[in-house]
Length: 421
Ligand SMILES: *Cc1c(COP(=O)(O)O)cnc(C)c1O
Image (cartoon, rainbow, N blue to C red; front, side, top):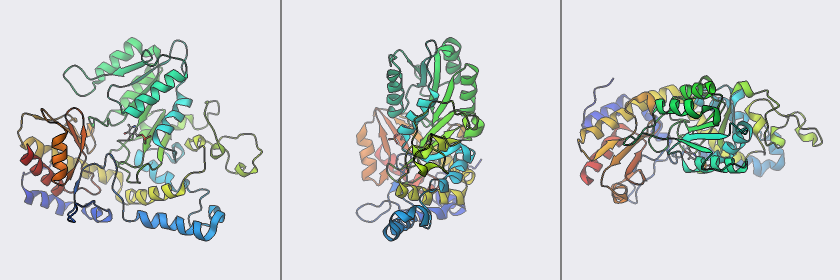
């Protein structure tokens, strides 16, 4: 591991040695009113725009202008099979087979569609287990599924909590919950990388634990996709969902991704909500056929998809394809390691990083707890040209994104934070 130094020269040296440093130029970096580039550490919330996105979207706008409905088959990138152009690259990013992956809908919608198929409560086994500080939308979604099936959403929801005085969830506690209540749990649904603490869970371990207890296991990988190597196929998870507007840089509200493990690919008995896009491509337009479900994740699509949003996703995936998720996570470990080193150098007893220190148990995000601070600190950082994310009561989340953040960025961020403390 690199021996870091707390100097601007050293940060610049790391940038000069970084083989991915040129990718920064391919993104629009937000600027202040004087035209200075801001230090953008919120790619975990909304990723920056690749400069190529405009071209990809313009291509579809032009084809629509020139071809109208014929664009479905005659566009440079025909719209009928358009989602297929995304599948292979997306599968690589999340470590899955193309059959297991589809881009469709938005994240919470996909989570519900997955639960329609994979949350199958019975009288004895109907509970859902989530992590205690799950993303609110995930919690609301599972609670509404419980109610939808006629269960009480408090009684039916089991929370995997961190211990008193600790921030991170502990696997022994999960084992204990499963030992005691495993036969009542129908579904385990965990945020693969927790949005608040940045903890990257061991998906395989959780899946094995769940499966050994007869539970279905799914993950929300909104904070994992494009950030860590997810290896979804090898994890054995039954399903996973994620969005593309965070680390995958595809624009606000862009479409989500969905993974269904190969072992379910040809299972026609799984209950699901369907539409014409989950129907056999060969007979889709005959309009009068008996429903004939597509194999794999594609068999969960409902509608013909929004091409403009998919064009933005293609622009981003082409960059990921070029870089390779492995190179990206390698840089990420050094960059976030440097950030961690600099924060620790502050030697301030009010500051604590709650994200795991083991690089294998996190992505690029560090969640920094600042005791006795309030949102004013976040606002002052903003005035100092550093965009971070504030979470009540006292946590600043910062994500140096390896595609466009520099070592100099994190050095300057910590210098500015030091002045404010
Ligand atoms: C960002 C995020 C969401 C947001 O859901 P949308 O349906 O895209 O609005 C949900 N869950 C998690 C874990 C997230 O990180």
